[in-house]
Amino acid sequence: VRDAAATWVVVCDSGKVCKDVGLAFPVPVEIAPAFHQRTLRRLAYLPYLGPCDARLRLGSGPAGRPGAPVNEGANPFVTDNGNYVADLHLRKPLSD
Image (cartoon, rainbow, N blue to C red; front, side):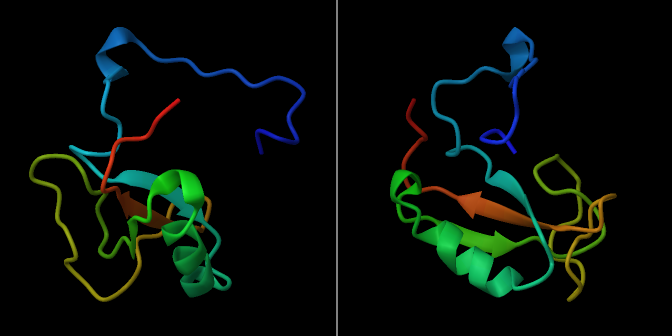
């Protein structure tokens, strides 16, 4: 999306800024359900990510929040857009 956009805007407050993105919590990536296993494999070996451990989010609740159910079911978590979520567990923090 960013490459196709005429303008890219990111809005966040100082509470969202951290120096080691990807170490405390997995980085969520929304992916299309079609060929999701192939997408997970490709994400795991992107050069700027690591390698990393790309896992399909399972269950009905979002992960990464205290008390949120994790892997409560065998079904993938589905976003309001009908897509799946890949959680990227990084071995080193993301760099600029």
